[in-house]
Length: 397
Image (cartoon, rainbow, N blue to C red; front, side, top):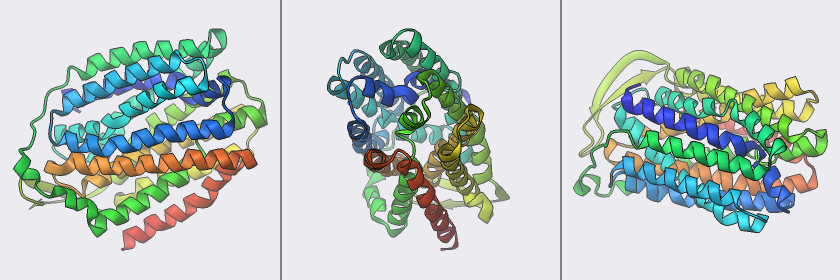
């Protein structure tokens, strides 16, 4: 953790605190503005579409222009978006602000490319999970604070407080160092790596994995309110436990995936990429964290279906924090498919795939929920064992 990675962690800590204020109660806010479950799912899917189409262009730009200023642009976009959402007077007028906010997510692959360069490409699973644990730590207290603010003032005020925190987060990002940009001729035809069989298999697996884990997420707060009668302040507190789970589990999953044999090798992976140091990993080290993370999300979905008391629900939300750890681990594995010169491209493509899954999952969740509120969680219980099997098959292949 050098100066730049600490600043990014601080920025994510502040952003996570701000986003945590509204993230877990946002479906309730959209419902309060007049949307039904299918419309809520449609709105969230539309936002996911915006995120999905932004990642690949952002990844390409991260290899061509200074990453620092791309990140600052993402922070400014998020600030504008959250203010617009807070000013909305109907669920239809909320959509533009929500889409602007969703666009700010384009800087995720830029952040990861920046971090990978900042640490010389070493132990990326641990680096990604540790730095993004800062984002999770910011959300440990804020969901409960957001639920309290929503009940004592208005949900609209929650978004304005979040905007102030986003502004402070942006100031931290503006302090990071600039990084070099590779000349254009060193990236010639790098885009063809996206069409390789290796990347296409990785893409298909990633899409199925995140549909399976995410389909139970978008309408969980509505499920708890509709079937359990839980108040918004209680749901906000549950979000705090999810953030705590992210903060605790992400570094653990990163360590599992970075468990190496202690042997290293040096090789050149392509023109302009320079020497790459590779560590040999045991079978468990290569995917142990990813398998454990999927298992924890599965257990979480099962508990949410069966539990009726707050302490047990809190445990479920703690375990579902493993979702973000799985996301960071997939991004770290994606870097193995690229060299330094096209790292932004590969990370942007990986984020696009994850976002595509998050386009499909909320829309499917809305229709499943309309049939039975328990169906989205049940779908996760059916699909996650399939992705665990695919993970094992991939290791053996």
